[in-house]
Picture (cartoon, rainbow, N blue to C red):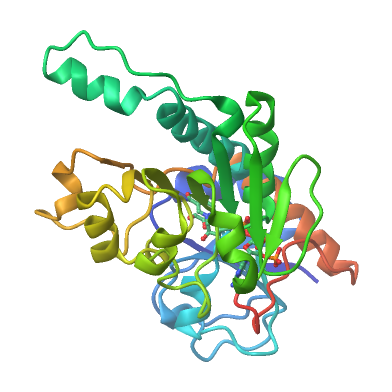
Length: 310
Ligand code: NAP
Ligand code: GLV
């Protein structure tokens, strides 16, 4: 029996993805979902798919979320409870995220953000260098993205700390877990890199209470989801110099609205949710392997735990 696959990937060119998928999974019949398509499908490969794709659809064996974060798919509650959801684990994203984290950390460590301001005002100024032995970097979220970021930060010699939900042991990383250990984790963190998923436990976690646990003048890098950040608290913390800067790849409402204070803020560096992009070739290879795995009756990597929300 042919494997039926329905595909919908908002913002991506089907002319690139469909041939790649068909080449990687020649045993499957892969079609672009269009309004009104309720024909049977074994697998749905989706990113930001309309609810209609799932409505009345029976027989789905699995849904593949064509991204790492499943918050939007889970929130839409469109996938029937019994249908497993798989997310992308890495698929070429982790190295991009780690590059971004390294860039942001080095920018603060070497004070390039401040040198840019000096240049803008025509000043040939000298700033005291930071001491790498006391420039602790903290990573919130020690999953696929967080551990890769830690691995790529390691050669720079900063003290590295990580925080997760469950206790962990990661080489060269001082590990902390749970809300109880959050104050110790944050106490000396100079740059906080956030790579948490958006769940009921993490929404708004980057707020004034958390900022108070950081040393004065720390910087924050949010690569997880915009909803993790209380944006008003961030603006207050920047105004009071509790925080020296923020690097944001994600914001609460994307795209960022015209006139939002972040656009012109001297201490905010913004990128439009590009830290870890879903590249076609890597993603297609991962999904093709996963479909074959399921067809053999095995469970591929990336199974989402709906009770945890990630
Ligand atoms: P992952 O492998 O599932 O890792 C998630 C990590 O967060 C785990 O270490 C988990 O702890 C920790 N965590 C979850 N809830 C927590 C809580 N309440 N308290 C403390 N720690 C908690 O996910 P991933 O692949 O690394 O991706 C992480 C997130 O990055 C995604 O969900 C997505 O939102 C974001 N992302 C953004 C981009 C971008 O372009 N900006 C690209 C890719 C991913 P345990 O290990 O104890 O379970
Ligand atoms: C991107 O934000 C992702 O979750 O993959």
